[in-house]
Length: 168
Image (cartoon, rainbow, N blue to C red; front, side, top):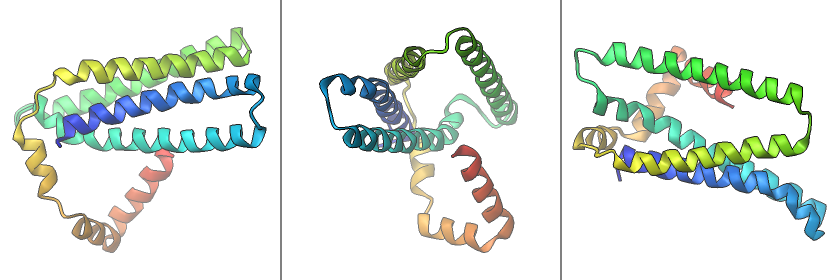
């Protein structure tokens, strides 16, 4: 299992959970108990964020597949700049769409569309042929030692907490 396969599976399951999340409110029509609907929404939302977090962690090792030592910093900075700009544009589009159409069905359609886009991305990502570099890099890290280092270094620990809360 490499970072590429992990990212594909995370995107696939993230897309599926988003689609399920968009379809859960329709269970009200089959007279499902409201507590079960709330329980399903909570569980599927939790799974969505679990899979989204896994996908986020795998992007860093895969950047090495597209870069070399000469352009690594330039590529990663442009990647995150484009990612941030795309997020801002998407949020502006969603806000303007909600401003024009204030209905629940628009909200559900946006979640459903996001899930379908994730599924398409996971399908397109299958074509990435990963070398052994990210896989070996991932195997070289010992989680217990990494957590010990982060916990004992105050600046690393603060960064971890800030980054985790900002992602949440």
